[in-house]
Figure (spheres, rainbow, N blue to C red):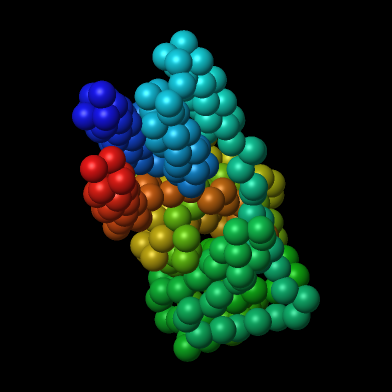
Length: 284
């Protein structure tokens, strides 16, 4: 009789271990999978942790309680955890860089703005393009950042002296985090009948001041450099236009850092192995 009871306990323990391992495997598989059409964000990662935890606990209860109640617990737990994991993300915050300054700034490259916004993003402007540019060739004032200037003989522009024949027709920008470019504002347009500005291959043509919106959000990867080129059609010997604001949105993380799911899987299997050894000793 005692042998039969001990045999039943061992079988029950073995079944419990197998069900726990099934739950662990389900949890690990959920952590390693990726979202369709994108990476695994922190929100989904936390949700899957909950799914995995509830799965492990529910499967381990199957041999302790009746199958009906245990399966009901599994289903209820999975639904609850899934609802947490799949709650729509909050509206992404927009960070607006104000490129104006209260006083005139003539700065050597590079020129940084930030960190600003809830995401603490840093914008860096550098590498001015053109000809006959002075050392301090990045210029901002109360009208904004000088994106284009043609300096004639009668008027100085963007810190360039009259008669210098200086031309600025581009610059580079970069961010410390991956962002989508959303919108920018043209301002300070003087003596120009029309102009253009291109962020990489994204070209904007304009004839006056005002906002310009990216139809397709332009991705600027963290640390990458984007060349911005500008043109203008002066109605005289000189002309200028500036940028006042640049709006960006933080891009979703590409994925959870590689080692994290692997470490989680290793920890789960190590725990399962120790648990199995401990329970087998008690059963014997």
